[in-house]
Image (tube, rainbow, N blue to C red):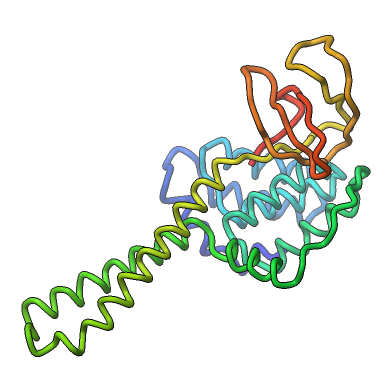
Length: 250
């Protein structure tokens, strides 16, 4: 547990909703966790989530509590959500990898080439929130340089500022494209099985034929959705339908 050194994150929770004592609930949840009362810790953390407030720390704590209850599907779900909010956190990444060791379903997926993995790690190394801040910083610098050129240096600064303007413009476009692509990626949801096992059906209809069975913690990309069913694709390429209530999404 590493909640104490992240207590400043509570400000994000407390400031958004006066009706819920987020600080008190998180403190209470932490105390329950430290005392080994994991069900009560989960209840305290979930109350915060029900108030539409979340943070990487909160999802990390929930993942740890669920892991100790051997509810690996929910543990992985919250570790994944924590990773989305804080993609460079080593503790989150370690616990996510460790929790996946307890899954029953294994997929023989070839490891990507080192260069491909490096590019992927760099591409997802910043959260969407961080990319938005970076885009805003670059835009601010670009506007300041334009103002400096137009109203301060004028003709004298053309040779000096032109390379800076070009560089900032290129960076702004690249970061904007990066952000836009990540936003589109974020619309592709993943489903994680939260129950012990589930049958994957051939159609989004009760009583349809069973294609195969998956076990708790197994995840798949959501391809289509109806009012009650998700069509998912597993890492090995298999597809099928599963009821909404059997999975959590991120």
